Figure 1: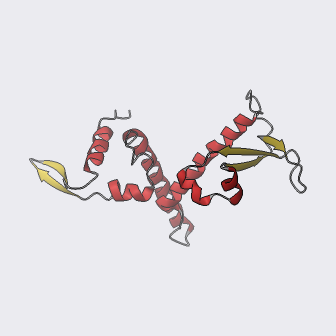
Figure 2: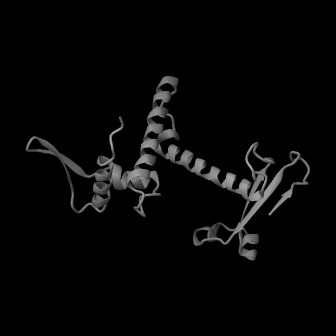
Figure 3: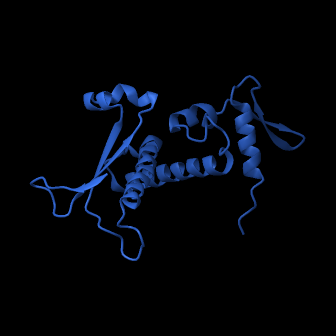
Length: 179
């Protein structure tokens, strides 16, 4: 539902979009008293977007709701970037922090591409947090050995995520080379 906001002190033409959904089990602890009473979970978005120029239907409530919900994915990427090292900058030097930010953004991009290209069908790793990915895949308990003039990566058989790593590695090596 949407209504024009008539409260004082708000910008002219401000609309409130209220979205109500049935709460999942993980949201039950965080419900307000009103939400517990009604049985619905509410999220409110305040926007002054009337329409986007040249996009048919952009004035409708469903479009604006989808636009704001899609922005949550951007916020999730920012949260992931902070977990990959952007939360704390290591130095008071601008040059050192610039290098740190480039490395942290590169790590976040590589993490996102790895998930997209190799872990898309893995239920527990496709949407895992960076800490979980570090524990399960990035901190690999293995040994690099040489045999017959070739390098071999020997992974401990009892490691619980060995099959996920080997599947991911084989998918990465099968990707066509960029020319």
